[in-house]
Length: 265
View: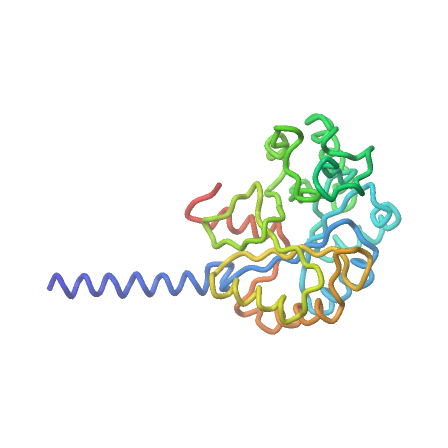
């Protein structure tokens, strides 16, 4: 009798585990987030129409310093009205110029010369600018160049109450309960084929994970670029498999994870 009860408990636990695997992300096997950095013109011309044509929503991390933001205020406002997320990528997109290969960093926006307070002020001002576009107070953040510190200070800790979560650049996907909301990993896309992008999604499906794509150029506009056909093939796959894949803005995915995870960080 004891053996039968033990077997029944094992079968039930397996069944619950399979159910969690299938419904762990808003009723789907995994969550996929499409993020686009730096307020590029190609995001407005190539990306938003492609997303809208399939009913998919993306996250656009904007920096007020870039011409693609300043010259397209009304167009970004329209992007927000369509249900896409506008995220904070800082006011001047500072990167640490004292790192190898960072000769291109503008000395005026060299993070290695910032004070923590300057970074806090610029992040706060970008939140104000974004609120004038979409009227929202909840926001997510993306680290410019993946740099997380001003000197020895982890600057996100100084502003974390202003954000739901932050996106980093570490190439990793994690299941519910294993996310570090101060630095959620993402996959930077540079020249991959559509098949390679889809393979990442299949890995997320198999591991019941959150997969975040980090795009810059799509059909040009940036040295970190992906071809339009490759990007389109990814979007079609996501749409065709929406019964298993939840494609959502970053803020929606992390808010869901926070309320459905057994543990949070």
